[in-house]
Amino acid sequence: DENNNLAFINELESKIKSLNVENKSLDRFIDDSKIVADNDLALANSLKRSKAKVVLGYFFHMSQEGLGYEIEKDTIDAKLAQISESKYSIIQFSAGEHPDEETFFDAYAPETNLPILTDTADSSGYFNMFPDFDGVVRWIPFIIKSGDEIFPPLSMQSIWHYLDNPPLIVKVAEYGVEAIQIGDIRIPTDEKGRMMINYLGPPKTFPHYPISDIINNRIPKGEFKDKIVLVGATAIGIYDMRNAPFSPVYPG
Image (cartoon, rainbow, N blue to C red; front, side, top):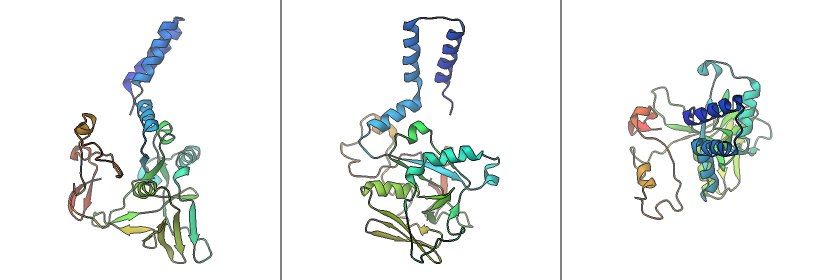
């Protein structure tokens, strides 16, 4: 979203320059005001200072038709370059040959975060979901291909960092994807690289904490130590809800 405060400061700076006003104190004031008003920079600096590993979410546009307009190839390549460090780097072919183009879900283009945020995070993972024909989300796609690379979801990237980055391998058989190997853990998948989700319960089965409680230090010290913490919105009004087996309005 556009930062109106920052836009106003930039407009003010342009106006001052057009009037040929030269004042070092005023220049310092403008520079300091930019830093204070730049919320993206503030978030990036917070990510830099964080002692925790940070994985950002993004999503793929699965088709140009679904997006509604065409993105220039250079723009797509630039966005893919942003997330290139988060791709699957090891693919093991048991059949000794590469799979055909239909093996993986193929995406048109990624919708990535701002470069200033992506560059300061440890990695990124997509949060695309593909509901069944009845609209219920029962599966998670562990692999989406875009360009010449294949990428893991937010959940896989999160557990990979939590386990201190063991070897992460996509195992491909003659019929398609066989499994994802993360260290000693083998996760069987269907031929498209999907896993059926083992839902543990309805919404809020896992502990939920309001951001206001965190900001105001109302959370017990050490509550998040050695935990995977997902930061997201649960309000129905933002329409980030999914139809899941336990609830038709499961926070996405």
